[in-house]
Amino acid sequence: MIHSNWDKKETIKQVTCVHTDAKKYVVENVLTKGKVYEVKNETDEFYFVVDNKGRISGFYKDYFQEVTG
Image 1 (cartoon, helix red, strand yellow):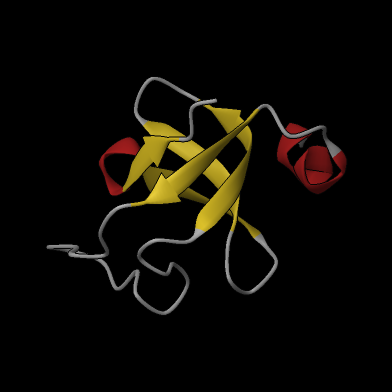
Image 2: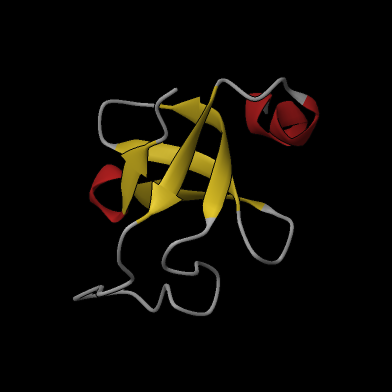
C-alpha cells in the first residue's frame, strides 16, 4: 500500500493542467485548466497529483505540461 503515503511524500515536480477535455472520464470536477499541481509520483503514462479536492489522484500525462524554471 505504497500509495497511502504519497500525500506525505516530497513533491518531485510541478505541472500545469493544459486541458480537461476527457473522452471517457469526468476530470473537470477535480482539475482546473491553467492551475499548477504538485506531482507526488509518476509512471510512464500517469502523473499522481494533489487534485482540487486535496486528494492524490492519477491522471494521464496529456492533461499536463511540466513547469520549467
